[in-house]
Length: 362
Ligand SMILES: NC(=O)c1ccc[n+]([C@@H]2O[C@H](COP(=O)([O-])OP(=O)(O)OC[C@H]3O[C@@H](n4cnc5c(N)ncnc54)[C@H](O)[C@@H]3O)[C@@H](O)[C@H]2O)c1
Ligand SMILES: [Zn+2]
Image 1 (cartoon, rainbow, N blue to C red):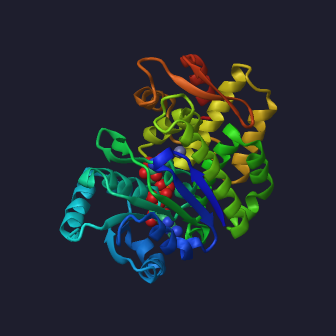
Image 2: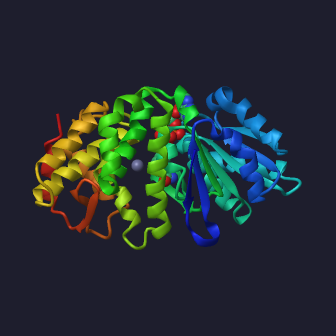
Image 3: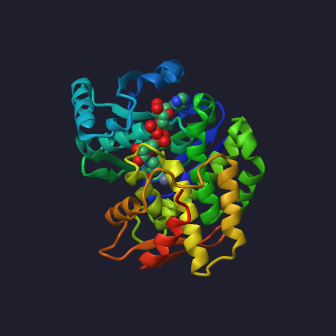
């Protein structure tokens, strides 16, 4: 079991990662003194698989439990779903001792966190992420949001959970594509901040894909530590520190959007975005040729895409210019100077961006 503290003074919280750590949940929540009634937001598939074990762990520790089921789709990250959950919450919240539990992947986590941030101007919530992507990334750091028709994650808040509990046991029912998507973010952490983690994934990716618990535990804990460290130093992305987490995301988001969120999932799109960003880094002579080659080898080995299919250059460039990470008309890229080292570069020429994307197009 690993415990990582995300240090934000009075709003600090622990991230607990391990195998079968769900048993620790009740005691951990009791210590936080955040209420007695757990309002668990989840979907029916997760409820069917793991609802009973969660319920038992909470009841054993003296909490009451109510499940709120939302549909299993990104569409649940909407104001409409948030509104219907809040209505249910308000009707149920008679004794005023409720806290929320986000029990699922990034969709559930973002939605539940958003609801926690606005209901009664903020109530406590905890994250129990059940996908690799959520365990290493979305459950940590307090970015909560719902999507609007105008774009993803446009309505939201930074609102930190009181606890993150990542049990790698949940990952045993995740399909391979979802595991690879989470692994893409793990590889990102290696590239931006942790050469040792990168080497670890290079040597152990087969065990990760086979869902070997100790290996998953190491990867989740190490990634959590990196994200927690970055967020604690720059919670609101004001100092250019949290920005490094966007490595691969500028072009990755554009690829996701240009493909109508249908061809690639988030992890796959950012794998492609990381390849483009490392290409740009090489064109600017920030790194030697062997670094992009090593990154590409690993991305390919774990089964993530290395070629962009069925999306045009024009569509990607268009989506790229709509990205909210642009400051005015200037762009801002997280580039690398080696495995584990980043450099933020503004105003990368459109020519260079086009060239790097073009090299990846089929
Ligand atoms: N807040 C942040 O910082 C942040 C960061 C990255 C991504 N996100 C958001 O996260 C979302 C994507 O998250 P995701 O990749 O976890 O997708 P997801 O939440 O849609 O989960 C993927 C699928 O896996 C299923 N699932 C979840 N746990 C399972 C388990 N243990 N066994 C079997 N199936 C399981 C879900 O029901 C779903 O069908 C996006 O909305 C994205 O915007 C947020
Ligand atoms: Zn991401």
